[in-house]
Length: 337
Length: 294
Image (cartoon, rainbow over all chains, first blue to last red; front, side):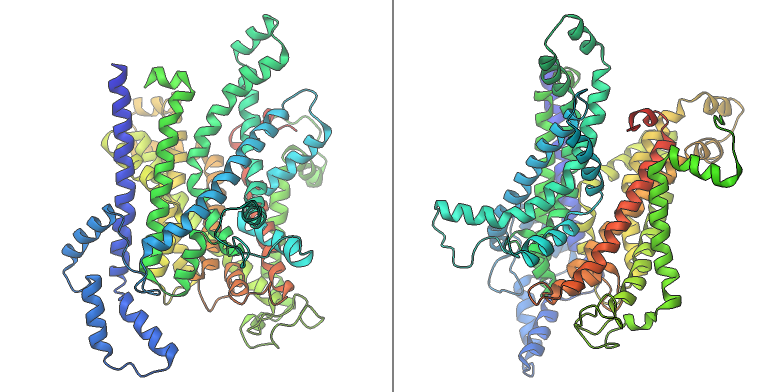
């Protein structure tokens, strides 16, 4: 019986994932067509105006391109073809870098984003949860009492604004860090200790702006949960049994308080991802956010829609993974579902 | 209403209020400062200089231009005054739509339940998985020409109802079990009437907190959209100032003053909205009063 319920829950999650991706793909398909845009024609006109040449045989060129991008078919047919392409993760050609493919551009950018966002989110989560738990200790250090409000106020400031402030002081004024980029221009592709250090050095400021701006929210949530958990009967019982305070704090209070935090983490993935897009833009970090920014600048519509779709897909998969893992961590949820 | 200390005029009342809810007070004061900057500023400063080519370009701060000028010749003080109001306006419009639609759907879903509720919850769940900013990027790049702040505000408003709906529905579900709702039902009041005249007024502080949160999220989305280059090209919103600054590589060229103005205003704005929303939360949810008592 329990297995069936579990399978049902997984099935529902998968359905939700498909629904989200379908909704995003359909919007991507429908909105530009409602706006009656012809991305190919626009791009060609832009190229013609940039090179200053008279667009000779422009009409024919547009026709040829439209046939290649499938824009000369009926909407229904285009839509089906589009959904089929999406299912195979074929995002089409980049208009600005034709014949480069959008999927290839995203494949080189995505590891940067996942690395930066993944590491800084995990760090912020761990640091924040520990700070929040420590703040409930009777003998919490004085410094912590002072740091909490600062972090909480910082959590109201968007990542990229904090990023701009950090760039201004640490990179521009004092030149401690590079102003942008993911690695040194001269760096080689070979994996070496120096290359890793170079990448970390470039990731430090963008990562710091994400960590500083999100620690406060985690700390606040954790402190609230800790206070709730400390009122529970099992904590009183553990105290009455004479367990060591250390063991109660770590194994009873923190263990239970951190679980709702994980749900909050799953829910805030979307917010984190859109924050990271803008952070990458500020730091010209070579991830998907910068790719999106440049695609917008060049009116490369297929690249814009490709970036959006892949980000939605990544977020939806990550959310699903966390929700499926959650019952493994919390036995109470396991027995209910 | 319990009054513990004897009141001595309105001043004493204000002090007591400020002491009881310092977050709300500080947030409101900061908001007032920004509104004053946006509305009283133009009385002493010529805001027509917020347009391009009205000053010599890329000048550091001076007496004539206290915040400097950008590389298109905008006076950045004037641009900040105009931009502050434009940015707040986007928040008010989109946040207003968000809470109005969210309250309606949230109450209806919670009160009637059934397929209506399932449909609302389903759409909200799917919609909230896709970050608003990404939605808006697709919107914005499809309808790029002729975007002004009002259109952008309406565009954000079409998404801004998602999280208020979820929050308000959760509150309304609890409230539906309340004794006075049951009593109104016994008295034969209709569903809409119960929602409007019994449930809505009781959730007023909560709706206010939800409104402030929606404003803050709308501004966050608008500034992000502007900074990505999908904002109104001919209006000096704070986000557009950040876009121009990035597009002209202000850091590499050493135009430090260009960066500081929009950041300062936006940080104050976000912190103010955050403080107001915690302050309202404390009023809406009395149980928080003890917990936040640090």
